[in-house]
Length: 99
Image 1 (spheres, rainbow, N blue to C red):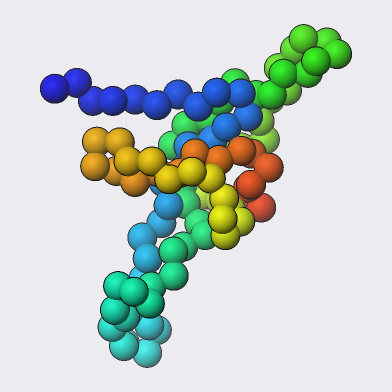
Image 2 (image 1 turned 60 degrees about the vertical axis):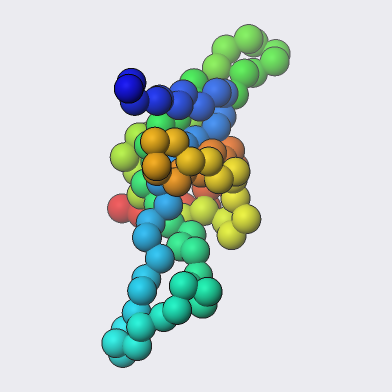
């Protein structure tokens, strides 16, 4: 079976969220229900950029594939492709790039 690929449109970004921590820094294991979903991840794909309606040109994105980013708590739409959970979000939902 062929592997599915997703190509984000315009200013949309495809992000693979980091794994939730299963234990605290002091070594206490957390139950599944108390784990916070991480607000960080790695960009898997980016769109071609928003369209400037005045000039008809694309406005390039400031992030690129492979960037580690921090995004807002309720950012994006969760999707599942080939068993991988991903988020599709707008570039506006990205708060920072982790260097």
